[in-house]
Image (cartoon, rainbow, N blue to C red; front, side, top):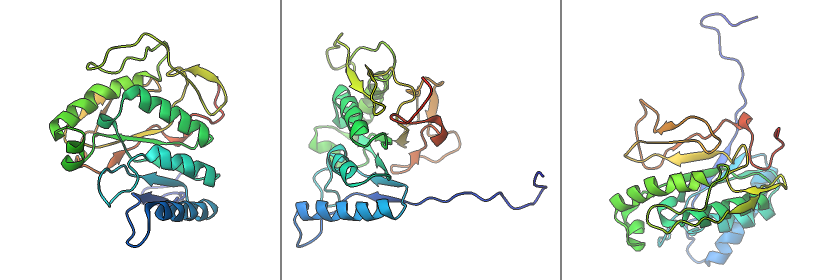
Length: 243
């Protein structure tokens, strides 16, 4: 029987996740902090937490994970169920081909539990460490995101943006389903989110859907919010999906 006007909403499942940046702990070495976090993640995995988000920061005690993929590779071996989400990869600081291959590798190591967050970065001080101004970081993000997404499209070459010499070789990766394909040919790709910046842009979903505009119309842009990727029902790299 359909619910009438004013009727309470149907019950919905509520899930809980963790957001972390692995901040320094006085009196403890970074190695000790990493081990402590991995023990925490093991307990979160057993306790039913759904996802672990890890921020990327550079040159600050706020974050001891300048390489989220490296820590999440260790986390993948210490956990069995919890989803792992770098939130976010700071795209302007990466070579796009290298980033795509690390994502493919991390998807394998996690058994298909990977979710991807991307952004241009929020700290001008961290961008300056890499010789970038905030404006340059934003421009580089807009330049490199199509190159990153393009690696998941059929028949794509390994071009690396306007400022790099394109390569005509094919880059291959093995999805967690165990099937080897050229980067870009797998459907669907891991879920994605994007950190919202001050400039809304349009880019196509790597899963082949029509272009989307981020942030969505009517939403207020900020430096730390994220927009959802494909719904969970769309499938993920490494999960059973129709060919």
